[in-house]
Length: 122
Image 1 (cartoon, helix red, strand yellow):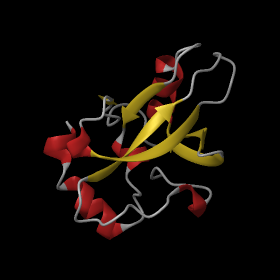
Image 2 (cartoon, helix red, strand yellow; image 1 turned 60 degrees about the vertical axis):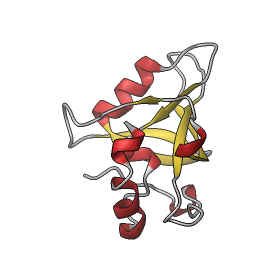
Image 3 (tube, helix red, strand yellow; image 1 turned 120 degrees about the vertical axis):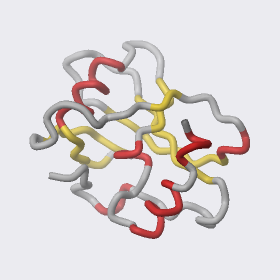
Image 4 (cartoon, helix red, strand yellow; image 1 turned 180 degrees about the vertical axis):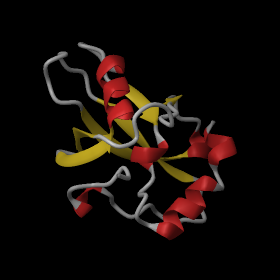
């Protein structure tokens, strides 16, 4: 299973792929028993946004974990979902860059463009 959307309306086109625009995921505050909820924002990496980078490539990559992304159902790998669940604060939002969420994995042109920015992102 890949980290795929249930709804293709989650991603807006990034402005000018040759620019230094990236998406960040805002992990919304919530209680432990609530669905993980994230919102995507777009910014320029050159503006020096404050965020934490999260690598998700560990653990079970077979089972999916449902979250809400921009208010729509979205499936991530179980390990990423569990990490988001544990990282979520009960009072404050958290801004993260997570390749499985912040890059539209089904858009090859975007994925290629974003991979070239990885050194800047990390």
